[in-house]
Image 1 (cartoon, rainbow, N blue to C red):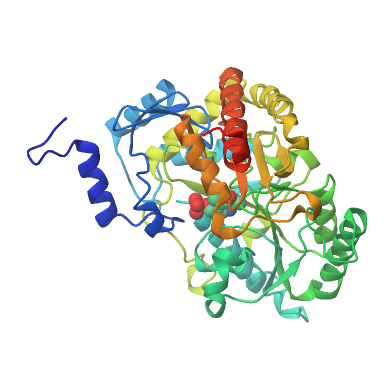
Image 2 (image 1 turned 180 degrees about the horizontal axis):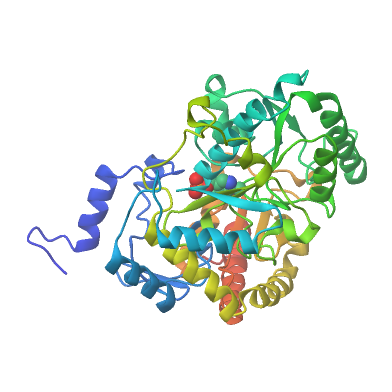
Length: 466
Ligand SMILES: *Cc1c(COP(=O)(O)O)cnc(C)c1O
């Protein structure tokens, strides 16, 4: 459509976008020259931009979409709730969708988690978990008799738990976090048990052994100082899909349980089917004391998050109001009824469409279709758990030497994929594939084929293709 001054709608929107919108996690100077798609509509597992170009959504719209876009059942649930009321507060009052969702989350999450505190994003779900754990330690019945203070958090190297100051404090990605140093509180860190590039003097086995020893030593030596241990179960997503060795999560649970240290499981990324089970903790039969959920909770529809806790933790907040044990935390849109309605519809679809069986089939398909990368000259490693995939691009497989950061190789692959009608987004030089748990197999095939093509075009320019 042409407007008076000759610009079409897309050009005009792009001009306004570049003039006024500051995009998250986006180098804006480069972005403004890139003519990124402006998505106008979605259907199933595709998104269509304002020029009518269709893209396969290869990253679940940043790791949150579960059943596709414009899913009739979820659309209807949100519309039905909209006919009733869009928002009421949970501060001192309740709403039917938030009650029903809490009940269903408690039913489906690992045993022992009986209380649901709502918020709006993964970052706030973690922030809430940290504050609850900290306050719990202050208010525990025997707190006064304890010698230690239990006011420090243990977290993993390379962890990502969100972008608010508390969740950044327990994070460990220097590129995102270094600049805020002075604002962050101190934590105790254990090494991430992944041996892609190991320090001098180590091989894979010796490094993983070192990580185990460090884990045990850190918990032993600091037990009386630790408020809680925070972990992304099974897979560290934003670190580049780093998959922990089997048994690691269970080991962390055993060590923390033995010392009475609460375990905070951040399932913001891995929850809702992505690793093959509804929640990742199930795979190692781990019951955390606090569980953080967001991203996939509404099927990727609306901003909603939940922090679940045990009765023991919750009970430490009970008393006569004047005693000041209340958890003074809450966001305006906490437990928004539209979000809760979407979440309830999404949970129903998990069962109705047998989504976890689909995840298992797609996990096999991804592994098979990406197996050709095993001897690609510029792929250092393909890491996968369920339908979470990270393809680590390297300049040289010898020692996994990285590409020069200035080349932005991962980003170049994204741009090449875009030309092929595929939406993906890398983390540094790790190409991330995160198909929605309900994506049909034939679209997973398309996702793999286009990704392989984009990687070749960018990393093997000698192949003469563009
Ligand atoms: C994305 C993510 C978060 C933060 O969630 P937001 O909704 O972006 O605030 C926290 N933890 C993990 C593991 C995540 O992947």
